[in-house]
Image (cartoon, rainbow, N blue to C red; front, side, top):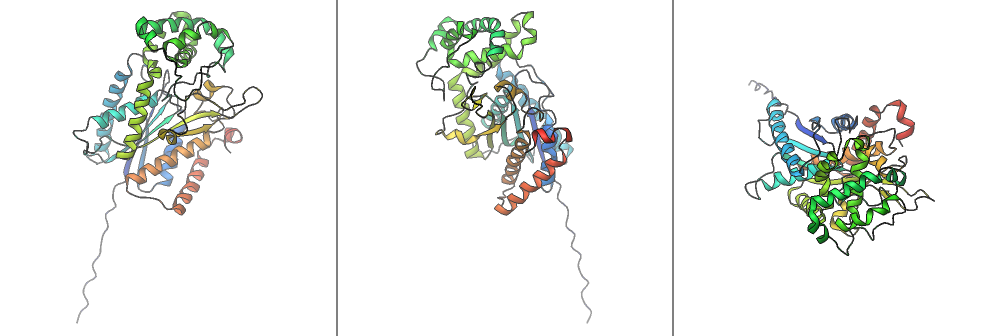
Length: 390
């Protein structure tokens, strides 16, 4: 009796999943805002997640002026086209929803990312329809989801005095954006969210800050000052730039819209599983000048349901909140850069695993954390090692 011929079983290797990580700069940002941060994240994720192709893509520099909604529509169109192109190029079928996407926005780029996500969610034919493009996470970096902290430019008093003149003009133009009636109607005895009281101004800002508070609270003062500071080199050429761009950043003091955006993002995470988190720069206390921690953005109340979405990104090197904000992705000016990279990669890894329906065990998670640290080490420039890496 002859033996049956052995059967050879061939297993077909499944194509790797595709992960697109899109980085979006903020107010007056450029293509270089994130420096080498995207390439480091791409390397760490490639080394720590099996069967995954990672692409980090920069959303092309865009004009931060006019209405925020216009920028959101432009970005949504761009992302839709990009997703189809990448799915076709990788044999996944254009529009098949097989590409996972993570949105990463710095500063007001986080507002753009959040509003694009909300727009995609709301554009579904019904609530049971899947989300496409398939966004699995929205990660923000120092985004003023609840506004700019009013102490930012109080703590940068030297800069504040220097730009006080132009800021006063910017604030007067803010009145024209709202109209006199709108300006007076926003007066409220209640301070902005998470602020106990308007700061006491001891510099040249005192001459115009009270009027700014009357428009929309301390928020307007810091937003106007921020506008002046970001464009300080061009102030002498006139104020048309300021009024055009103030229309864009005016979103920072629409408190009800800010709160609604937060509620929506929390709801999207709960019901659609889209991870949302916001890293905020944190300068630890530096007595005697600063007895309390400093932040660039307003934080939610600790008891708020959205507080869990906000994660500190500590920087001991920055002289003030503005420097911490603008140098968030500069390892020579941010000693928390290394940890920020690891934390970001871990959040994205967990989002990818969740999209695959996988929950990592404690041992697996710990092993992956070690692998991520080793992968991050390989990307680290020797010249900044002693300054920025723990």
